[in-house]
Image 1 (cartoon, rainbow, N blue to C red):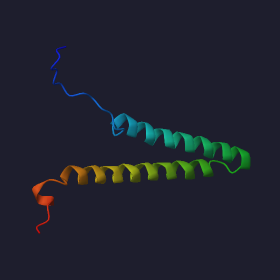
Image 2 (image 1 turned 90 degrees about the vertical axis):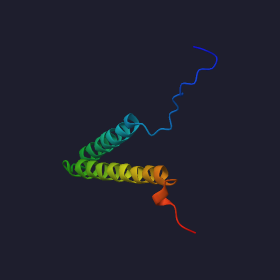
Image 3 (image 1 turned 120 degrees about the vertical axis):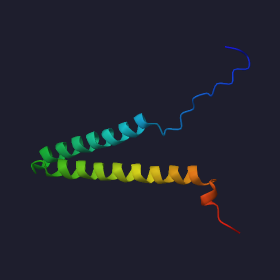
Length: 86
């Protein structure tokens, strides 16, 4: 490696696909386990498990959508079609 190495350095900002996948799956698994535990505690069958997993899935997809919208707005902020005329 030379002193004037101009290769870009990788800097993670937490927006990688693996981080998003782990957040989506991890939330569902944790809430599913919590729901299963509460179901066994209260004897309600898989009701709370299903409710918590459906809530985790809905919130994960909503979070992914809003992250996508924010990223698109940031990318297109300086484009000619996004500029307002004064």
